Image 1 (cartoon, rainbow over the protein chains, first blue to last red):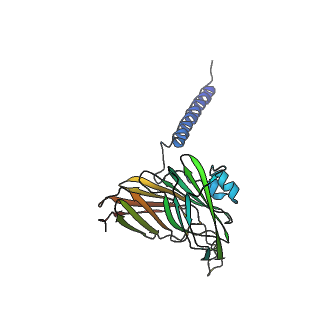
Image 2 (image 1 turned 60 degrees about the vertical axis):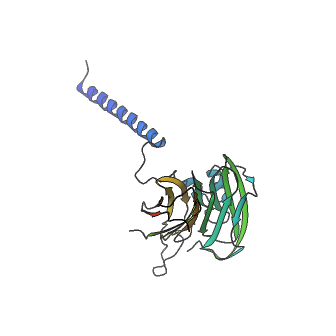
Image 3 (image 1 turned 45 degrees about the horizontal axis):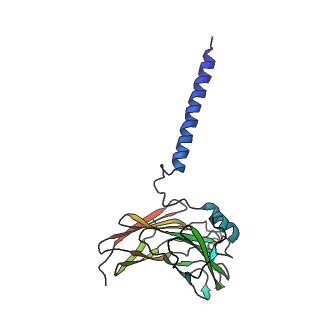
Length: 164
Length: 107
């Protein structure tokens, strides 16, 4: 004979199980990208890569391993940047099937500056302005045909731009 | 209310050249407010999406090391006069903004 108490606890267990099942379902739906917050834009922001404090960790967190050096990545940047707060950078990839361009500044406190994913009709070109804390290598990684390629360019910085 | 986005589109043959200037402080969290001497909190755009007639053509993820009032120029193939170019951003505080522009006739 069951006591009312055990009934209650069975009910509680049942509803807890249902809740767990529901939350597992919601988590999988989230992971599968079925449920997205209203403002979710594009892919998830890669926090681990952006938070990395040195370029090796940043590359690793971005999933970039042993990129092949390539002369097909064209970087236009000043040899000497007077103002590290506004360093103009143009990048063009001539690698067939370019999907994404990553910008890293090796000596910035957090080296991963940004990534640009090209879809459909966009040309694999970007012109932008970045902050550089001090003289450093610019490290441009291109994902083309599922492979990683890299090119670097040193920019000398007169006045650093990280505290701006 | 975030600062406005300036969006300019130029058509050269089938190639639309898009220039975007986004009004945003892009605070690194390392800058001191000259009045108070306090560090200004981290405040920066994390994601930017560009669309052609509603279809994403460029999706960017940014850190605080993109310059203040970020500038971005890119090119889209196969654009025609009257097509719509859209830009949308989201920052680390959940603020966002968007703008659209029509592709003008070639010239």
